[in-house]
Length: 336
Figure 1 (spheres, helix red, strand yellow):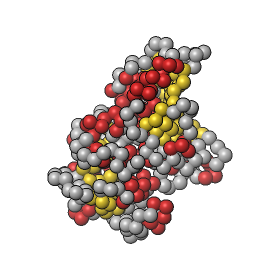
Figure 2: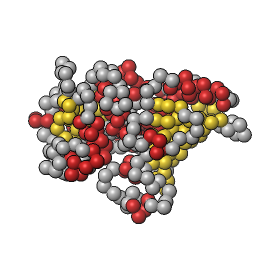
Figure 3: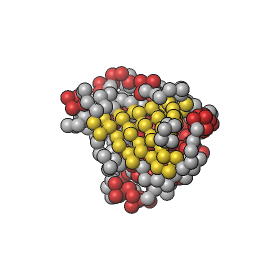
Figure 4: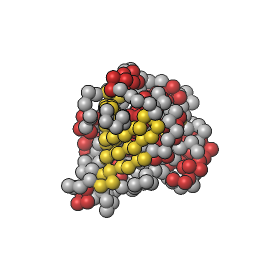
């Protein structure tokens, strides 16, 4: 497939939170052109009627690949299971795809099927590149299919990657807190305002589907551990804070930890090592991640925090960061 001056980008599933933000970012992008925006439930409605704040005037259509696949790229914002057949059909047409679902994140089909559903396009698994840009930018560049990470793995892996690479992770407990937008646009019994307001509650304890994704990528980095991962729902619209409690393989000083984090992220445009534990407001509606580490001298544990916006760096803006690399553009383009 030849590159064109302004590649057109299909947003499949643009009526959801993540798809709508992706449409907003592409609509304002200096290099990409917003192509069709599709929805299974809101076809015929202007996207601006659902999300006036994004100021995207395009009208949602029902996906028809015979018409809508005449594009150079696509961001697929479908749930797991539903995404894989659409991704496969787009790849057959040589469309470059960033998939926001979990369908191509896990390299082992058996692991995916143990945590999710039978895989609808397993032949594409070897082609897929895990889309945590800071870890895989060389492979993402020019890739045909990128599996955008989950929001929790994004924050967790950015917090832990420097320690994992240094062989310092013997065990880790991850306490994650996220706003209700992570559950999607349709409210549920647990994400309804009445259930969330004035409340903090853990959920999916011992069984959150992002756990094998975190373990997979930590193992690639050299830390073969079984992560204890516990997410909590907090009364926020969007935003995510992960607190990672690491039992190190050897004693770590505060100076050594500071140097490790600083060296890891000195050249990263979107990851910033900050002087104090971060909050989610600091990164809201941005592609930035704030990381901070502390050594507890009493226990010897290393505590690393990472704050992101779950819908931006955790999903949609990271998808655009990846798409930039896939088309040979500066990864900050349209995101700075």
